[in-house]
Image (cartoon, rainbow, N blue to C red; front, side):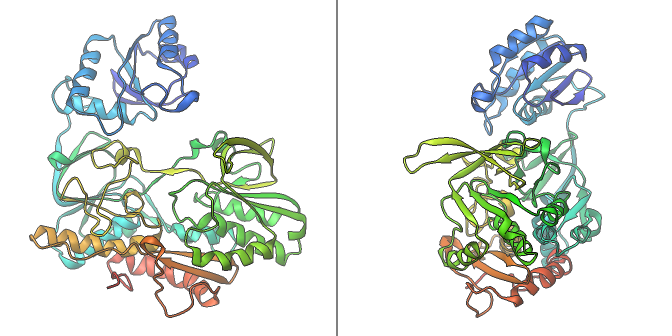
Amino acid sequence: MSTWTQLNAEMAVSEQLAAHELSEIYAAGFRSVICNRPDAEGGDAQPGQHDIAQAAQAVGLQFAYLPLVPGQIGLDEARAFAQLISTMPGPVLAYCRTGNRSQTVYQLAQSQGLLPSTDAAPKATISADFDVVIVGGGSGGIGVAASLLKRDSSLSIAIIEPSESHYYQPAWTLVGGGTYEIEATKRSTASVMPKGVQWLQAAASRFIPDCNRVVLADGREVSYQQLIVCPGLELHWAGIEGLEETLGANGVTSNYRFDLAPYTWELVQELKGGTAIFSQPSMPIKCAGAPQKAMYLSCDHWLKQGRLANIKVEFCNAGAVLFGVATFVPPLMQYVERYGIDLAFNHQLVKVDGPAKTAWFDVTGADGVVTRVEKRFDMLHAVPPQRSPDVVRNSPLANAAGWCEVDQHTLQSQRFANVFSLGDACSAPNAKTMAAVRKQIVIVAENLLALRVGKPLSTLYDGYGACPLTVEKGKVVMAEFGFGGKLLPTFPLDPAVPRRSQWFLKATILPMVYWNLMLKGHEWLARPSK
């Protein structure tokens, strides 16, 4: 059954509905349904609005179709929506793919006075005015707030972040390899919030950059002089059929989730023989090396335990190459050969049946023809497709691919001069890694302050990102590179050589740098190269 969010007594929004759910929706008290999702947006699997309309009418629900395109929700759409609400019997349930567009158009109609306000959902009001508003309290948001305050302690800054917990995600690979404790990767958001920053514990639901405002999920509006967009990206688990239902059971795991990384290590210890599949989706993804890092650490354990000969290891990569920067492919191939890994390129994971221990992949041939193949497994490390969050993707800030569109060197929005973005949600063509964020913090902090005083934006980002490739327990290939794959090593060492010193950096030094320096505005080795 789909879930819905109650906005007030007369209005709710929902994710995509199925025809068989309409009777239950009627039983819940709703009397009208509005479809805001364009037909065929989700392909053949998406129920058409005509099917939903027939099912709605069959149980006594009134139905209307008002398709909304992401990023194109304006006053005309708000007026049309308000007209429907005013003429249809209530309560009303509106739906789209996730419910976000339906909520956005409702809040826009309400904020423009097109709908009557209610006690349960009052007309949005300005809750506060700030010099700088930061959307996202992850590594980018906390780090850039601290760096701004180090430079100008007089700034009034708000961070919009709903989560009570803050995570050091790069260590989840180590947790899955049995070399790091999961609880050491988690702290409370309150404990890392910079002193002097106002934490607004809510989700951002809509950007109104023409008016310098952000709408929160509870209906409040926050105004700003400058805006920094860094909400991270969305792990689209539902993009692989059956995956969510079996994660954490039946041998299916992923180091991309806090609660699952320990399960990865359990599976690695328990597996004595059979087939282990490690998947990687299409780019872009958070830390493109992470899927194979999990594989190498697992293989290293099996090799040392004398089990690897009994385990078939397969790396199913939706891409066409092992790693995007050619310099690092030869050393990685040495480990692929050492561990006897079968490489399966152009393999996109599309479906999982956990109890049956079966996975399906769409395989693109050299002729471009896609065929679906079935593979059995005893262990599956699955990495979900990844995309920009709805709040960015459906906003005026987004480019055609849904990312916050910025100049890749200044990280300033190409559409709104007082908006900057960093981290996974921005459109800069760099690797989406923690190391990239560490460098981007300096770029945004200095350029935003330059903008405030009318100076040129002279601090430029070179695309730096780093991927510490854990090829075995105790050794790392430190891949550091910028735009176009240009090598940008921090230390004068051959970057293609696996080193114990880099393992020590990855497992011991960098976590301390993160908690004690980066999140507190200390920019050790973080300035852009000249």
